[in-house]
Image 1 (spheres, one colour):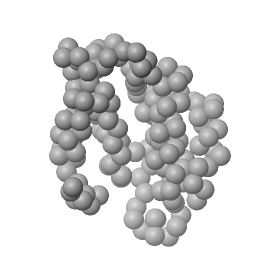
Image 2: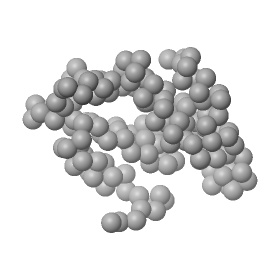
Image 3: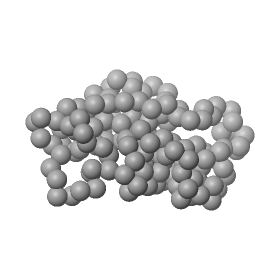
Length: 144
C-alpha cells in the first residue's frame, strides 16, 4: 500500500484511482485536504446521490458513465494557523459526511448535498469543538 503525503499528492493520480473504484462502487468521495473534495460517480444522467439510498436498484450498468469533480474547500487554512491552534481538523470528516448524507435524505441535488457537507466541514474546521453545535444547526436548518 502506498503512503500519501498531502503536499505531494497528484490529484490526477487520485482521480484515476477513484475512477477505477467506481467501476465497482457507485460513488467514491475522497477528501483531499486543502485541495478540497473529489467526487467520482458512475451514473446515468438522471441519477442523483440520493438515488443511492434505494438499495433495490443496481447502479453499475454499462450504460452509466463515470464523472469526477473536484470541489474546492469553502475555507482555506494555512499550516501556520493550524500550528497556532486556531482551527481543528478533528471532526471535519464526520461533519462532511453528515452534511452529504443529510442532503441525500432531503433528496437535494448533488451540488447541494456536497455544498451542505462542505459547509458543515468548514464550520467544524473553524471551531475547536470536534462536532460544533453550529454545524449541527446548519444541517437541521440548511440555507441552500
